[in-house]
Amino acid sequence: MNSCCPKKCSPSPCQMNSSIQRVSPPMELGEAPHWNPLTQSLYFVDVHRRKINKYHPETSCYTTAMIDCCDPLSFIIPVHNQPNTFLVGLGPAIGVIRWDGCSNRAEYRYLKTIDKTPGNRLNDAKADASGRLWVGSMGPEMNDNPGYYHKCRGSLFTVEFNGAVTKRLSNISISNGMTWSLDNKLFYYIDTYKYAIEAYDFDLISGNICNGRVIFDFKCKNITGDPDGMTIDTNGNLWVACFNSDHILKINPNTSTLMTTIEFPAYQITSVAFGGPNLDQLYVTTASYNTTDVQKSKLPYSGTVFRVIDTCSTGFNGVPVKINLCSLN
Image 1 (cartoon, helix red, strand yellow):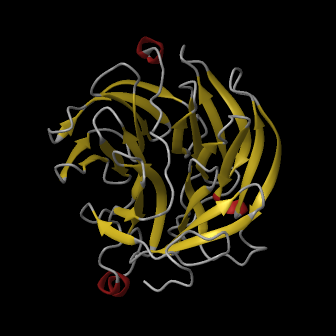
Image 2 (cartoon, one colour; image 1 turned 30 degrees about the vertical axis):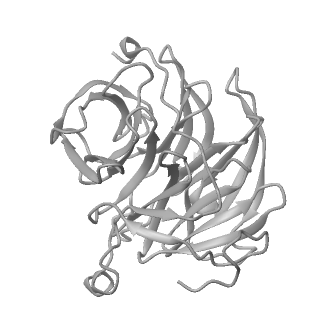
Image 3 (spheres, helix red, strand yellow; image 1 turned 90 degrees about the vertical axis):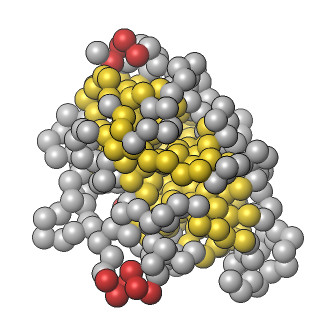
């Protein structure tokens, strides 16, 4: 790809000249990348095909397993101190599965409905620094307009160690990217159909959020694509995937400055996560959902997971969920 800046990172907007590698076969809707330092592997899902996936960079080993459950399968996060145990999103509920990372089948053990609104399903999820689960939901896809979803039907929830569920935000359209500032004083959040990144004052002890405000507006800055998954680097910059586009963004949330874009040979960019032994590799999930045959012929790697080298940044390990599994019965 072309670059309008030198290899050394620059604070001005530019297209970064980075090495991009494919590390998975194409999926329909790749999502929710999570780097697990214990296995030195990336976990992610293929949403509508109900598949969990694992990529081990050291051996270049890629494995996948089918979950025999409801559609869709929205995320996979390891459970703290429980080897081969994961929390997953299953339709409107969360479930706990066991998977050795090798076999091609994994069954869920528990199920707890989070969003009881008819037609809704869970979407993105992450654990905060305390291990508390944050999970958002979204409304159903429109029957007469595939790829578009009913607005303002979803919510943002937290699930505590004891299984207690708290609704943090309502009237959410598509709950997506979540991350926290380096000092854990701010919660960054994306509701896709707002076409913006918001910041909330955040209290790690209680999980309370307040004083929401827009810190980066896609429409005002003429950014193409829909904001989707998001992560943060060790300098406090946000990395944001843009669905219905071919790029991700690097943003300084303190100045609302677009620092960098990176383009991919894919039509739909869904999420991002740092990984690798030094946490300096950026993994990017993509999709081929509702793409035409012509589009697939032009960009056959849509749906692939990509690894980006030379981002001039490092990130953080994925945080496992701390939860009492018996509380999900």
